[in-house]
Structure formats: structure tokens, C-alpha cells
Length: 504
Image (cartoon, rainbow, N blue to C red; front, top):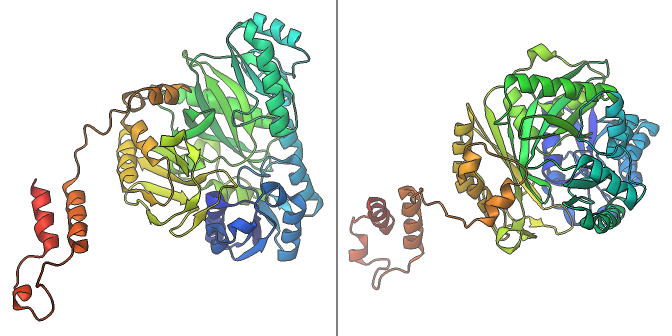
């Protein structure tokens, strides 16, 4: 087992990995940019090293600087978290060349699955079902028109090296296609340095469901159940849950078996995720593979009772999986909200700044993976993800109730957050009924928010507010030290106002 691990990341995921390391008796090394000097992951680490200015290209994306810190600190392994260098095959290879273990798949597997077109080519050979379209980048607008006519409109253009909706365009008819292709290729080049774009049939109102897999370095691969990831804004996941409301035991088994075949075809090791699109008839199609730990991994941990980061580290150290597929069970229900520093009232514009007040929820069935604290200044240089709030219950209804309660306990002052968005989602009738697809959030946001009409203010909240007002209220005239009238054993303003409000 490793004695020291460097976490090549920041924010809540760096804190999450450090917690796992501490539980396993492993020392941790943090890296940080200039603006992250006071970040929580720096404070939690056993050692911390600066790696450059705020720009990620000069700090968190600098392979040479990170490997230099690993050598100077004596770290035996590097955990990349997600984002930044987590799916960079060159980084994984550089770690191997330096004699440092990369906690993730091999560079070869990452290369194979990192390009969506290469992945489709390999999956086609392995007989994996995927959405009709091209397995290679489009050579010309004419080819795009031919394929679109063959598979039928609407079609989706996608960047081969893409992610997060970059280089993606939905095309409804032939007159739109050429301009959309040029736009997608241009955006792909700017975002990924690769203009390759392919085309596939657009599935109307699909669900986005993914399957978690684990594979050790001894040939053992298992699936750990699915996650429903259909609630998205601009192709970015917002809320995830496990298990999916529409997946039954038979469908779960079939999806899991396909996911294992995908991983084995790629000679994959460590934690990975196979993403599927699911149509209205519950047919599922391979979409892509994420060769890293996912943001939403906590919902799988809660519903399986497994710690994925512990298992990642054990697999990377050469251990065999300590269980077989028959040992994996799914219990209860978990839902995760991604808490972002963004303003829902201003088109979700990022909201950096100082956190003046932070009240965080807790209680039965609530988990928080957070990278923020009161007094910290949220930088404007990185993804605005602050924390993840996860509700767990014996069933979906209890998970929703607990999460809704926790969201009303969550309070962040000084910056804007999207907490109000999740309160609205959890109140939505279609969400409650599990009627989800990738267009759900756009439809919900297009409707007027009815507000929490079914929820009256809790008496205890009104009482607390009234009490605070009484404490802050100036004392009455003559009520000062030594005044006999002020020392009478009458009920305090706090109690008087609190009782009055509670009885209203």
C-alpha cells in the first residue's frame, strides 16, 4: 500500500480524496495555485506546494510542475480527481515514465476511450449497441448530409474529443447542417485543440443513464449499478440519483453486462463509467466512457455501501477486488445536488467572492462533500462547483424529503448559489413522478415558479427570527443598569416574541 499520495486537483474532490487517504493511513500532498493558497484542500493536506499562477494552464494543467512536486515530496502515487488532467493520457504516461503510479486506467485505455470516435470504432467491433451514426470524424459537409439523410433528422453533431456540451449541435433539417457543422468544428478546435466532429441520430427526449464499473489489474471487472443523470442544463449534469426511477432489475443486469464488456474491450482498470442514452422504449445505447472518478460517485457509494476512492487506491496498489459481482447489492436511494457559485436570477452567471456566512445542513441521511468554508473567497478562475449535497433514504420518497429538508437548512451569504434551483426541482410534479429526460430542466425553467405553496413557514423558524429581532432591538427608555423596573422577573423579549409568533 502507498504511504504518500499527491492529489493533482483542488476543491471538494481534493478534500474527498484526502479523507479516504487519512482513513487508510496514507499521507497526502496538495498542490495549489496562487489564488488557492487559503483553499480548504490546502488546509486539510499533510503537505502543500505552490505550482503557479491562477490560470489552470500555468498551474493545475502543468504536468512538469506536478511531477516535480511528487518527486520532491516523495509521493508514490498521484490521484487526479476529475477534470484538469484526470483524462489526459500524456499525464498518465508521464507518471509511468517517472516511476509514479497514476491512480486510474493505463494511458493506452485512456487513449482508446478518450476519443469518442475511436471508442465507437472499438465498440462496433465488440458488438456494443450504440446510436446510429458515424464511427469516424466527418470528412466533408457532403458526407454529413449523406449520413443525416440515412439515419434521419434530427441529428446530433459531436466533437470527438468533446465533453460538457462543447462542439455539440442539434440539427433538425438539411438547411441547418452545413453552418452547424462549421460552428461545431470551430468550437471543438477552440475547446480541445481538435476539430474532429462526428454525427449520430438524435434520440428524442432521451434519458442519460450511466453505469459505474470497477476493474482490478488481475482481470476482474464488476458493475455497481446505474445513476440517472438526465437533469442537465446546457449538457451539464445538475442533479443525479441512484438507482434510476425507470431501471428494473433485468434492465440493470443487461446494462451492467454491456458496461463490463465495454471495459474489457478497452483492457480497462480502476474506476470508470459507461454512459448510455435510453429512449422512450427503454432501449439503451452506448454513448461514451469516462475514464475517471465521476462527480456523482457518492450516490453509488451510498447505495452500494462501497468506498470508490478506497477501492481506486487499492486497485492501483495491485490488490484484487475484494468481492465478486454476486456480492454487489443495491439498497435504498440517493440523490445528489451540485452546489455551484452561480446566480439563478442572472442566467446562472458565476458568482465569485467571499463567503461571509455559511450554515451547512446535517442530520439523518445527509452527506456533504464540500470544498468551501466561512470566510473563504471563491476564485473566479475555475469551475464554480463548491460542494455536493446528497440525500439518502430507504426509498426515493424518503431521499427527496431528507434532501428537501437539508436544502432549507443550507445558507450561504456573500455570494450567490443555485440552492434555490434544487428546491424548485424537488417540488416539481414530474420530478416526483420520475418523469425525466434530458429536456426536463429546460421545460421546468420555462414555466413560472409556483413557489413553495404547500409549505407554510415553520413556527420554530418564525420564533428564531423574532428572537433575533428582539435581541437587536434597542432597549426601552430607562431600562439600564440599576433601574429597579428593569430587574423585574418578567419574560424576556426573546420568549415573548417567540411564543407569540409560534401561536400565530
